[in-house]
Amino acid sequence: MILDLKQIFEGRKQLLEFDTEITESVLAEKEPYMTFASPVSIKGSVRSRAGVISLDMTVTTVLDQMCDRCMKALVREYSFTPSHTLVTALENEDEEGYEYDDYVACPDKTLDVSELALTDLKLGLPTKILCKEDCKGLCPKCGKDLNDGACEHSELT
Image 1 (cartoon, one colour):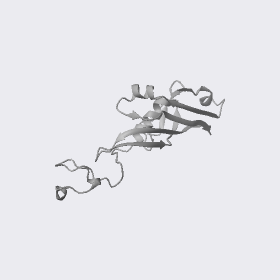
Image 2: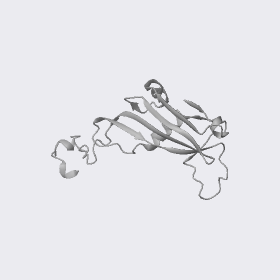
Image 3: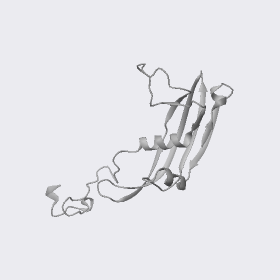
Image 4: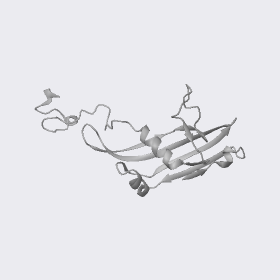
């Protein structure tokens, strides 16, 4: 979904709300290494306050995943609330204290909110997916799921 932000940047409008989703078929094409169990829902607003243009959104989806330790399949919902400051250009790149992670350049005064939401989603996901915090994983010798109890090699783990 492309947002036209021209009225916001020019001060003719103070608020632009949006509510969209990225379908599973589009997700399969854009993110082939992730398995989505639901569309990605994106809700939010672009607001101009005192000349500062901010984007706040909620990105929600359900992913089919596997535990990194025991390889059990799991389905988990993720919801993130990223915020960004929108600018027409990133200037003063060498200036200290300039937070680039929160700034998004919109040189043509448009924003592909779907692409930004997918980027925020990928950056927000945990690096290690676990079925539970204390997952014991698999025995390295016999492959038994140690969450179901010890095996004859349990002293190795």
